[in-house]
Length: 237
Figure 1 (cartoon, rainbow, N blue to C red):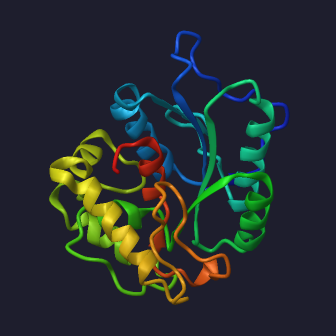
Figure 2: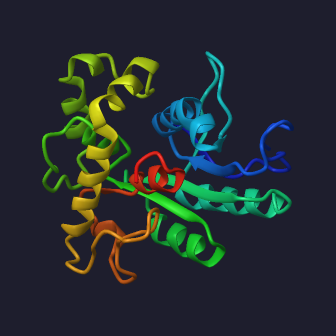
């Protein structure tokens, strides 16, 4: 999958003209197709109910087009560009969403994000962990950089047997059944408490990171910050 930096001169997406001004607007820059498809469904399902809009970058691609996501540093830089380009819009929040994967620029991405007020939803080893937590009976053990374990677990679930990269509508419906989102949040918080650094704990403030400032992000195995976005949006308290 090709990754890129910010498109020069691109116009940032903006909320529709008829949108209530009270709406919270989240600009989310995604590394991969899985993330983008998940947040698309989240926005469609809950946006009107909870008074928020999610503006996704990259924009949706049509069939046959290549998806050009953002590696960590370019993702943060694009979020910074969007932040600087949308200063007239109220109630905006900016996120960069990326994974451990094989990325070598994660420390720099976190440094840039801290300096510029960009939120990071980081998953180790990858975003699919967040999906799996909805269906898991408990938190997984250490995964290292193995990218095969969690997708294999997902595909053992009947409704995810066809899962490859995109979160399709029927996948999303399975994720939101029977309080599964609340379960996923609790398991993600458990992973924070179980962080190998030994200095982390779930934050009392919704949407805040529970990882200590001196926690090494590359050692957060396994972990995912995606639950923080659901807290910010009020989907799960």
